[in-house]
Image 1 (cartoon, rainbow, N blue to C red):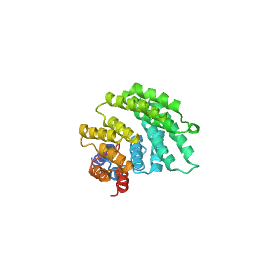
Image 2: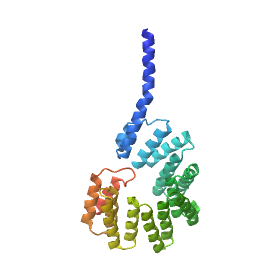
Image 3: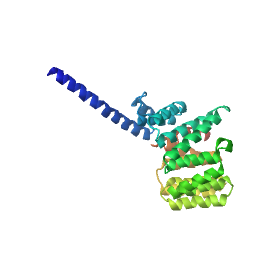
Image 4: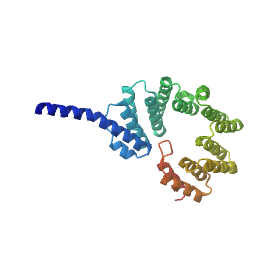
Length: 285
């Protein structure tokens, strides 16, 4: 009887391990969404072979700026789950960030890997708005010898528009700006707002565009509209402060907005607080 109870206890323990790991993973994901990256990392198995856990580990390393570790995690995740579009997308992003800071000799190879994995992400999930958007950006900005090109970007823009009309207007605005067709670019941004009036990003896109065109009063008015329609939204404060610092005007207001941003709860989709700290220093804080 004692032997049976001991064996039964072992079985219960073994059954409890996956449940505990699942709880840790869920809690780590919640901490990640709150940008508590160190706390999230502490809950995860650094030697895991589980693709979901590897993806989360990779995203944490990515957000912490360790793009080499992020690359390693996403490679292992994709190897474990070769049909996972999201793993391919994040792997492309990790290679992209490495390419941005690499030396002259290493950058082209890393950029090529960025493109390859963005293309794979779209191939695995042609309806992924995120993968299409990242591939569009790559095609639009990369030179031809690295696989970029306006025509390629335009084709992807058509795919985006078929899935998400508001995002489609935005990418068509990007195409128009590339050709310095600023009238059509502005029209597309305004159409994006009409297509998705409750998406704050669409309003901010227009505000930043007007600022880049030197139309300061109009830009300020659109930022004010964003503040009214989307109160207590940290990305609005960051975007407006970023414009003010870039233009070197009304720096006290920029500092106030950035301090609010630093005190707010943000998500991984918002700009990193390290970037807000950098802007604060530029604003004279």
